[in-house]
Image (tube, rainbow, N blue to C red; front, side):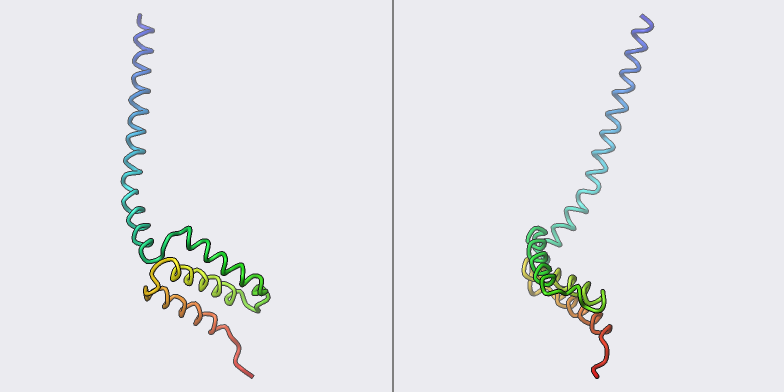
Amino acid sequence: MRKSSKSKAVRSAIARSKAMRLSWERRKVEMNAPIESDLLSSRGLTHGSFDSNARISQALKQVMRSAAYHSLPNTVFIESLDMIASKISRILSGRGDFKDHWDDIAGYATLAANKCSEPE
């Protein structure tokens, strides 16, 4: 009988441990969910859906790749074009009147312009 009661106590302890772990995991998810949900919701209002952004951005980048933009003399030019394509996709997917999108495009264009050589 002692062995049986010990096994029962062990099984009970294991069950409590699992329940505590599941409870903790559930709490972690609940604590992070509002932050992630709020962030994604607010971004969705200004940036549009991620699926739409991905589709438009990748289409723009494919056009740029087909134009041999990798032959540009500086990786800053390539990255600036990639980031500008991402910002354009946000304009087309989300709010086109969101000033940050346009400011970001101007910023990436300025970074590229700063790497340009002076006209001869």
